[in-house]
Image (cartoon, rainbow, N blue to C red; front, side, top):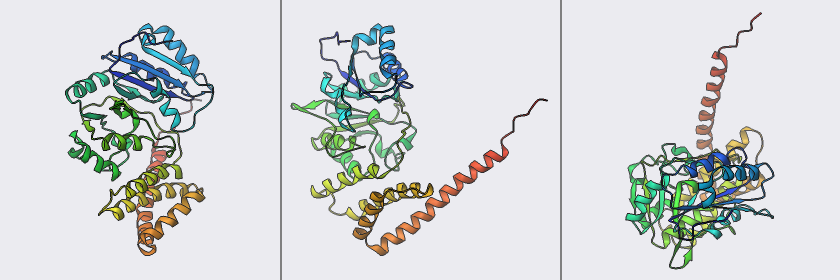
Length: 332
């Protein structure tokens, strides 16, 4: 299934697939339904062991328009972690990259809304569709209007390195290259959140961001990953890298506290199910020493209390719901 359009498209849509037989047809249907058609579509099947290949092939056979825009690559050797994200980018010819993960899907206006912004603002390197379900974003206080509209690269960089605003890959459309430098995810140092490195590279090259708060166009699947040490590992790698680059003149302790709390959230979540990782415990102890044992202990106890209250509220709601649910009547 080769690309039949030899002209450089405006967008390249990239989907990496690994065992997505239940969701990939919805993803592809949303691409086929776009009301802006100047795009190519790259699907990389990262050695799926389910029926993903059959679902993809069958859908393309039935949809000639999407088939003509699609390049489907089935890998013979499985790529690990972030390396699989970069594989579709190797085949990309578009000016801008649109990521649609194999369990995500777009509303039909997603590309047309982005195109309007990007053609008027050539210095924008990141177009971000901000959904109402802000819990899907890493960071806090995202309801604030300071995150809306045009953000110059320096302002967006401050939000990124403070871990206040890290939108997921499918919510970001980014420029493919600048001055012959092609943007990719860091697959050598990251195991879960390779988008952090990509956003950093875009911003330090003075490419600005545009946050479309009215573009409720991206629908995201739910991660099947259990929260574990590797979720926080990538943030700490970024933090230590940016610390060496001189980004934290006055707020190093504040950021360290924020990351420590994020680590505690993972730890308490594991503790409730009586299962925690040794790597995470070692990590917490090392960070406690850097923050100061007394201070980190107070933070630990305070955050534990907050976490337990929140957990007990959720648990009590579940109990009440189960008690008051109507039992099905049995006809005799």
